[in-house]
Image 1 (cartoon, rainbow, N blue to C red):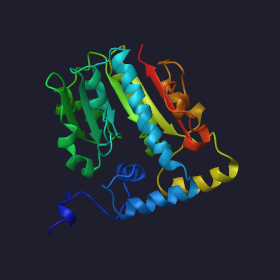
Image 2 (cartoon, helix red, strand yellow):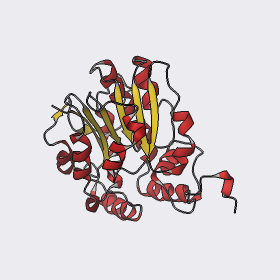
Image 3 (cartoon, rainbow, N blue to C red):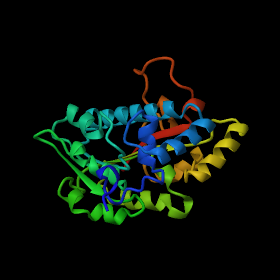
Image 4 (cartoon, helix red, strand yellow):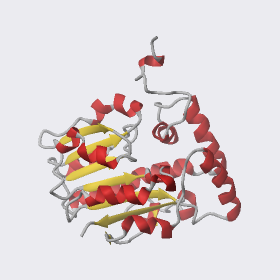
Length: 270
């Protein structure tokens, strides 16, 4: 039986997926009715969510630019990369250092269908794609595509941008982060953005909490996020609202913390 639109047989268009919903927020076309309906429920409770999506992309750009240009990182492990949206991690990094090497990881078959776009690279660098779930860090770390592309004995930037809030507490997100960070060499970095309701009034929190539960989204407070960075050295300015992380050269005025409702952090592995 032919699959709709020639899609990968694992694609279930009747169930919303975070990568496709994010694509919808960003104005993309690689999403389906279930993704748009899910996205619209979030928009109804949090009307500035599209601004969050664009600011999250801007944070990724700033973080990769800092790590490549100032910290000298040449290897990136980007988990939960989502559907390609230019500029991607490898485009940013290789635009500064053509020899940068990037491994993307995602569990959405739609992303897999776009892997060729992700795998474009400079002649001096390399990119690869691993079809895996963040909940299984050992499988990610053992993937041949990863081992052939980056050297874990040298510093790596682990990118967990807008993905940890899809892990419930029962998934042990701190343990997942610990296992991934534990495989990295000293001088590596952890990059995180994570939804939080810390900045929102009680009425909005009540509305969003119901939607978040239905959409399998787990917000966390700043104190809870701190558990992901135990033993690491926070890079200035630390755990801050997403739109404020090293945004001195971004257009003014900046979005408020409540508009974006998300924290961003970069930390170094000592």
